[in-house]
Amino acid sequence: MSDGEFDYVIVGAGSAGCVLANRLSEDGNATVCLLEAGPRDRSWQIHVPLAVMWAMMNEKINWKFNSAPQRQAGGRSIYMPRGMTLGGSSAINGMVYVRGNPADYDDWAEAGNAGWSWADVKPYFLKSENNEQFAGDGHHAAGGPLNVTFLSDPNPVVDTFVAAAESLQHRHNPDFNGETEEGFGIHQVTQKKGRRMSTATAFLDPVRGRKNLTIMTDAPVERVTLEGGCATGVELTRGRKILARREVILSAGAITSPKLLLQSGIGDASELQEYGIEAKHQLPGVGRNLQDHASIHAIVRTKSRVPVGFSVAALPRLAWSVVNYALRRRGLWSSNMVEAGGFVRTRPELTRPDVQFVLMPGYRARPPRLIAYGHGYAVTTVLLRPKSRGSVTLAKNGNGFAPVIDPHFFEEPEDMETLLQGFKESRRILEAEPFQQYEPFHYQPETAASDDDLRQYILENSATIFHPVGTCKMGSDADAVVDERLRVHGVQGLRVADASIMPTICGGNTSAPAIMIGEKASDMIKEDAI
Image 1 (spheres, rainbow, N blue to C red):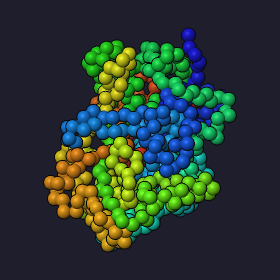
Image 2: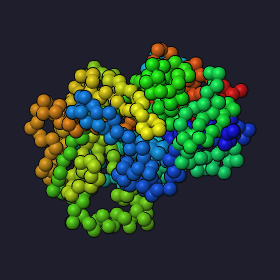
Image 3: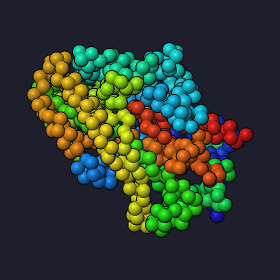
């Protein structure tokens, strides 16, 4: 006995899943069920941009994963938040809209994934986009559901950051999604009128009234049901079953999509046996190929109170910021706190950037604290193209399973050396003359640190900027999980459409690419249904 039957069952209402729900339900003759493990997106921490600091720690809307201890990071477990609400991680992320380098997608196509070159995927970025500043320039579009814009009131530290980079011969780049990715500038963000625009806001809210679309929240899925090599539906953790007449589409993200495949008996048979799971289909690549953007912070404290911070003297300004946002949706509370950035090559012979910088124009507390006393700013250095590869596997957790997330950070020595070179450049920028107006008095790590000191600092303090991908890799090799049309190899009626299908990680933030994947997958599913 089932609790419902639909043409399409989508598991995960995240960056790609909400897009799929919207596009597949455009066909009034197709019934669509969207299942989300978390609650409705009602929390103020989702919609007020500055509240990202709290959303990142809120267990009601966040899976709050931690990695396995990392051997090359001092044995530490790395915090890895993922969204657990309508909108998924697009509801709790930094809202930065970066597509990555066009050559990233050409690499996918050259690896044998026909239809995934930059020329192929660019139209799907444009399809989603409503760009307030750059529409019509050939790189951007207007009229799509997803609003993309600049922050209304960036902190003055943003201009200082760009000026400091220019003083060291880096170029200014007004649009990281334009002619080139390289350079320094202000981020565009997924906001509208000072509020976050998640994929739930952009793609679900306008179509909630469609009679052929059913959205179920607080509905965690346990496994995909299989019969004769075909996906027939899903089973929820409470024993309910939802049947799929045409397809089941996993859009649960790079952690949970492979977890669900493994729990369904799809994976390496020997590993499944260890978990006590009956092997239904041998597919050893499930959960392999995990990639993420490792990062390290350089933090500066200042005597100046221009940078965001908490102090007695700043209390009137902080109080006004609340009023300003309530009345005008402007000011500090409209900030995503990662307001500017840059993309650079650590070696001149490289053809594209291998390191990203992200500016936080406020004094950064050390986790788990959210707020620290004082003023300052921080620059995060991000390793864009890691050589290391990790995995997502399972571990018993009561009557069920928990994901074991092991990114294998820095297990390839080249990753540490690339991040080190980028980190050194970030420190040069922070020490440049334009920043001296803020009277910096404390640098972390200290300015005289040697390369060995910095390597140790990275080992003890590195983190991630929360971009896991690749665990249901697209391709035709032995580790591939889906083909170029995102169909799971050897299983009928089952696809994966989220960041987990990326063969290699994009050189930039991963939210916009995940949305693109949702758009492209929707068209492929419609084409294959004819």
